[in-house]
Structures are given as structure tokens and as C-alpha cells.
Image (cartoon, rainbow, N blue to C red; front, top):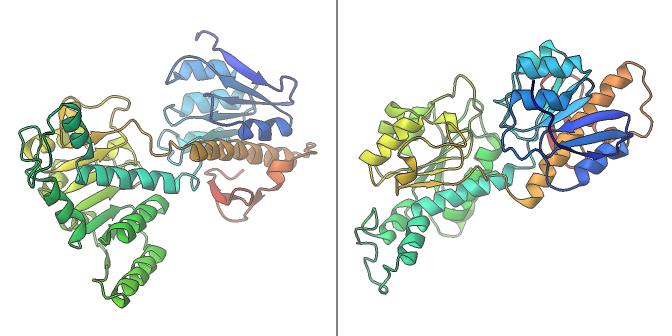
Length: 402
């Protein structure tokens, strides 16, 4: 049996018990729950990733809803424990839900929500930042400077054993100023936002692959191309690829934005890495297992002009052996959504998910829900597996219709 976990309690006399497995940024999410007569218990255990046993101990004998994190394994064991405790709602503080067994949630009658929308631009910004950092070799330049190797400006400053490429200027010119191509795999909210940044910011042509046509993105690139042409500049273009392999072969810079499921596990493997250009740049801010990291390390070693920017890792928080030593890899610790505004927004949406699911269920049973201010601002769209919160203008996905 797991040891009791330490908690912080808000509104101890609240009627409904809602547990958060981690402290979350801001206080608005707490205020929303407290205003609806929820007792809020926040786990303060000094543990980065809670075990299943820890979470079961948190759930206890009575729990109406849980706000959890993407690092937790929400499957049969946890959903059965939550159901036994009378729980009706689980909210994942993330846009991805690969850590959630939705079938198990359905089996035990637990509604599941995530937090898309609010982190779209922030995540796209980091993907764009990694793209620029890899293309302009910012991390290497910083190390070069700190190592005391800078003797003064030279036309071929980076013609030095410390660096991977003969000239920083060559990288800048080949990637951005000659109408090169950015490839996007997964043109949903984040993928499309990233594409717009790269097309408008650096006048790159676009090739994308997605199961669904990204009509709004296509119209944006077309309109921007017409603007450039009217200004006497070379217009940008777009192309919807027939396959992912087509993107890998044609693009100079590729950013991955698919969901993680059985069909996208190791989507980028040894074979597909070999399809890419020798000087290509690969960015991943989606989920780590989308890339075969062992194959990636081998490819980086064999192709020193190939570069990668990673925010996520296959065995997070760990990296595969050899990755940390690769100078042509930029690695950051899963910070794509890490802005104050975004993380507070995610926490707020996570709390709203729980409130909506709880009180809709209670209303169906004829229970009193007086004072439901926050959840009244959120209404159910009949026939659509989504909830919409007008107060924050973002979709809340719900995978189980109660």
C-alpha cells in the first residue's frame, strides 16, 4: 500500500472533492472550483512524477474529479479506482492524451477532458525558436563565445574545429533567404500556427501532410503570396503532399505536429531519416516517441550537417545514449507551453473541464447545482464531442459523452 501523500487543501468544507495531482500555475483555477463549493486538494509531494499507487492514495475513498498531468499513466487501474470513489471526471492538463486510455475511461463512466487551444501559439513559437536556433547554430555560437574562442570578426568565422559547419552565413542563406521549403507534418492548430510563422516571418514555401485539408492555412499562404507578388517580391507557395515521405524528401526544414498513437509511434525512423536532405533540420515539439531516438542519434553521427531541435523525448525525462553529446542537436526540457499566461490558461481549462462534467452529470440526476457560475458559461453542443467555454474562447475536448 502506498504511503499517504502530502496535500494542500482549499475550502476544506466544500461539498465536492476535486484532486489535483500537481500544483498548477495561478489561482484562478482554484477560485473557479472553490466558487462551486469544491474542496480542492493539491498534491505537494516532492516527486516529479507520481506513481499509480501515489495517485490511488490521493483519490482515496471519495473523489468527484481529478486534474492530472501528461506524465501519469491513466489506464484501467486509475479509472477503476476513481470510479469506485464516485469520480465522474478526469482532466488532463495537456493538449495530448496519449497517457490516457480513453476506452478504460468509457468503461468506468469517467469523462475525460484536455486543454487545447490556449497553448497553440506558445508551442508554435518554441518550434519556430528551435528552427532558428538550429539553422543559425545559436547554441554552438554561445558555447564558442563562452569558451573564449572568439578572436574577432572574420568572413569565415565558423571555420574552426569547434564548429560543425564551415560558415554560419552559409546556413542562414541556404535555409531562409533563397525561398527554401518548410515542411509540416500534422497541420492542426499548432502545425498551422507554426507554418504561418515560418511562411510570413521567413518567406518560406510550404509543403504539408495531413489527413485533412488545411483550408485556412492554404488560404493564408495564397493571400501572403499575392501580397508579396504585388510588392514586387517572389511569392511564397504551398503544396499539400500526398504522403509524409514526400514532405521528408522535399523540405529543407521539417516540423512534426502529429498526435501520438499506434500509427505515429516511430513515425520518423531510420528509413525515413535517410529520405531527408543531408542538410535538413528536423523539429519535434509534439511527443517524443514519434521519433525513433536511437535511429536519430545514429543519423546525427553519420550526417554532421543534419540538425535537430527537440522539446520532447522518447523515454522522457531521459535521452537515448549519445544524444546529449551531439553538437548538431538542440535539446530543451519539454517547455513548449511554458509561458506564464499559457500554463495558467491550461490550469483554468483543466478546472473548467472538471466542473462541466461534474455538474452536467449531477443535473441529469436531479441534484441541486445552485450557484454554478463558471459551468453555466460553458454549454454543451449537442451531437459534438466538444465543450466550448465562451469566457476563454477555446475548445475543450471531451472524449466521453455522458
